[in-house]
Image 1 (cartoon, rainbow, N blue to C red):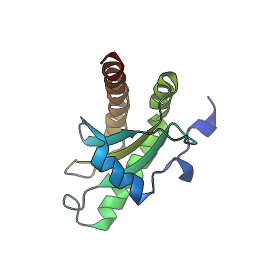
Image 2 (tube, rainbow, N blue to C red):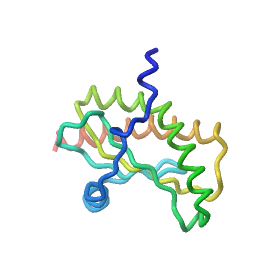
Image 3 (cartoon, helix red, strand yellow):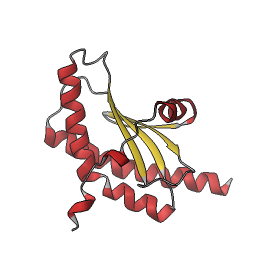
Image 4 (cartoon, rainbow, N blue to C red):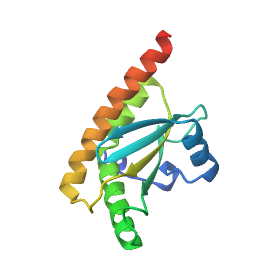
Length: 138
């Protein structure tokens, strides 16, 4: 498999405060333990199928060291598992803005987080299919 697919470049990251606030005001929400995904369909032409931001709550993890560790782990498992979602989005001709919010109460182990991210990507792909089909059938 092409190794270039397993990257998480700066151009794939959602950094715009304006877009992030628009995402929370007008976006949809999806939950898969321990992640909440806030997502919004993008009408602009993006360099990647998804622009992603990752967040960990300060209320659950007051120490910045813990939050940064969790975000680093989430970025890594996202980098390795996002291709499944990218393929589905390419088939549906969709581009999205998404924010992945970790809502767990303890610092996760890598293997457990990887399993949860795979589950998230699969269930989110299925969720998108049903949402898109419902919008087009209405």
